Image (cartoon, rainbow, N blue to C red; front, top):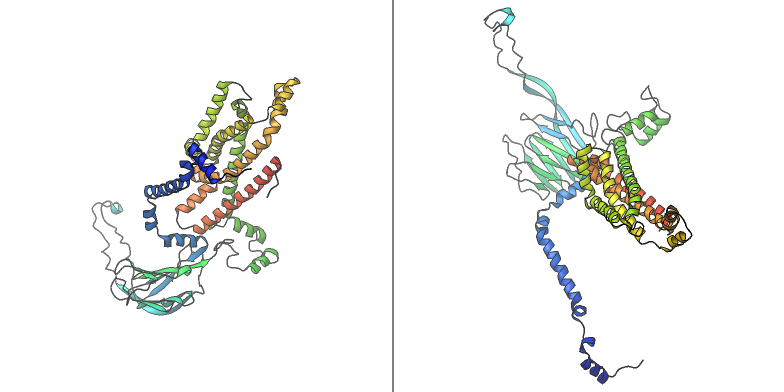
Length: 496
């Protein structure tokens, strides 16, 4: 191959400049694509107001929500009366159980005389209109005297200390509240007024929106507290899921793993009507805090919803795809009718179909299966028909030339080519619909999606929500693995 000299190259360039000069697109395509990308991103930033969204986002609340997914809280309230009497109460459904005496709370008690106003007894009247079968008889009972305070001795709390972490604690006494964290101290005296005022400036971990309003003190992952004039609400947080196995109502509540195992296999019966093992299984499945049996039943309902909907869609799409394929059914009207039917079904999103069938059939898995069936019939029908239109026609021609029946031609000339593809696509849709069934379930189609949505609406059951999310992820992972293995065997590929 001869190399051109500079003079020869210049001569060719002068005779054919359009060949050797670079084209506009080849020269400027990279800068133009970069400018177009930047312009598009700026347009999206402006249209969706991303800057305003980021500026208004409360990342602290978002982080708090994430922390609540993997932690639980105890919420005692330390109430402070005007006469200095204090009391510690836990919510009725607090996960700490009956007779709470947590190690992280120290309570000192004493007795004191309190002036208590007894409730006024109900007045009974024997007179009046039609009283005692008499007519216009005046009242026979005089009005009760005004209530007078009585003095009685009561046991009250004189000091309560809550330890949040090393170096972080909150001490409540009748005259003041002291909060310590990281070597800093916050003192809130309790006077006769209704305002909450700290002595000195608030540290960085305390917040008061308005003067005299309640003070919120944060202790990081250990929790937080709300200080009012007459009460201190504690939110003591711990990692993990509380009462996941046994609820406070269970006879096994509060026992260690060793004690539970001993009761299951060697200990005396806790319930004379059944064994301890049966009692433990019942208490676990019907745990009112976690509702394991109900959650697993809803998850199974979601899996069945996805399986039945996908199966029926594949069964209907299979014969219709032969009608839609032009090389199988050489009839323009039949082809177009089948294809437009597929377009109608798949053009409406599965979520819209779910809302429609929920109104028609009511909430439940039937609506979810119908939504999956309608959407996937159109999608699978289109994919099946396109696979049929791309088959090799030589096996069909060979069978036709030897006089095989039309059914035999399709059975032995077409089906072996497309059946692995059909099954592979159906398995993929089944795997995908396992995820989609959760979404349409939240719209009223039943299953674990509806239960997940109900838990999210409370804005409190975040550990339960995370529990269901983990179950959904695990289920999708299992069916994804099964689907990949089956598709690999059908297509002859080695699974990685």
